Length: 448
Ligand code: ADP
Ligand code: MG
Image (cartoon, rainbow, N blue to C red; front, side, top):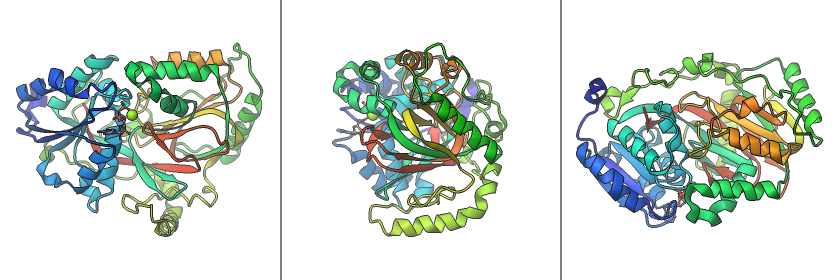
């Protein structure tokens, strides 16, 4: 596809950040075996930076002269990109800085974004070094896609930016507990899942969200209440009554209304790595309009709340959909009555791990958080079936009555159990009330 290559300006200077301790500690040898030659043959000048400690990459990109670099690429797991995204968003010039093209090469044990990028390119699921080579090719092609970021507020007042997922309960516990099986590489998540299944527990909490598609409030509340009531007892494995309406098709209206439309094999490239080909508007979605009247008030309240907290970073786009964490959620949100959860998983990329397509409909720039939760009452066998189905992304077809899926723009979770980890992009954060909202197309990802 010569036309695609013509759009890439050469030479293009990459800063390649590598975490030598990611995965089984093999990122450096993955670089020399697969990536170095590929970049040389594609005539892509690059500077390798090996991180020396946690948050090294975050500090480095916070201070870097970004005019020196055409892209920041990480060779690690998702955790190192999380550092880079947050380092960029902590800068005074965050709005320009976060437009620096970001690339991902899988070298960790949690390579969800790399698996997602490979999926968006139309390539079948790949694991390990095959996934790395595929992502290396996409990097050399240098096509860019806008990427949504989710702004996350923690109880301490800290604000973070997330590109992948928020997880609580089962999934987050597996992520954290499986650290001890790090030497098993990506297999650590399977081991962790089996261990946690054996001692399955539920976590009490309150969840609220702002749906993308509003349905009449009375209907919505009635449906959620019925669902919680019907699943609060242990259900049999044969119970197959559907718990939600089927998810929208990938070509549903909000997705195709985005600037580049749904990503398919035949879609024209969004833009290439060179700035002159990469103009993108990120106009607010029409769905945001119904909440705009609250927006400025909420933003001011949040800023005021933030200014009382030394840990808060007030940089970044204002979160116009959120009210302060110590106040009730806005009236147009849906409340799930307080109940027991097995897990909550809010995804904005399609893959949660190399072999887990947890949110098959998610795309980097759909302006949408794909919110899944599993209520207590699910059997171990049914939960295992869900995770097995996730390899192909067919878990909604299991019609598990405790599994609920919504497309949302914002959410708030208040954990009420002392147990249960909370993770942002696979990194553990303080357990406590947390809320988040999506910001469409804020960043740019080297994708397809
Ligand atoms: P993995 O997928 O194997 O967990 P990550 O990229 O997520 O790989 O990195 C794991 C953790 O290591 C992250 O919390 C990241 O911030 C941290 N980290 C980054 N560089 C280093 C380093 N040089 N030494 C130790 N930890 C690091
Ligand atoms: Mg990680």
